[in-house]
Length: 138
Ligand code: SF4
Image (cartoon, rainbow, N blue to C red):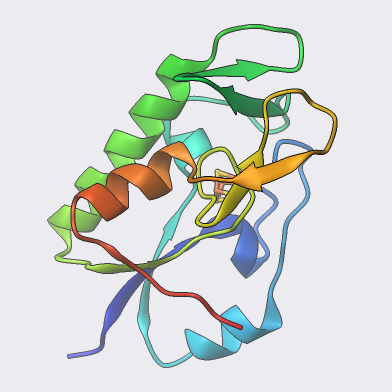
């Protein structure tokens, strides 16, 4: 049976980013060519639209660039993603770093000044806490 791996939709070229663009990554695409893929976009799963306002994590909450608390959408997206992976017995994921949902090593610092800091996105954190292995593609 082929290995099942979840992957952030934007890394595969789907225009799911807040600005309707993507983060297509040729190396990720090549790595997944012979595998079964679950395509995920936690922010869309959580009920946010494309396009949408950009959001960042501040403390325990998430806010968009107009100061609206959007934590509920991000939490729902994380839970929906975990539920989907569990349903298919998927234990590995490739996630887009830097995102408030998918970030695996860094995120923006909540000031909307393009300042990065070490940290995990909401979905990445929930997946790791539930034993999902995050695969880094160099
Ligand atoms: Fe990509 Fe994740 Fe953002 Fe969706 S939530 S656009 S998959 S980084």
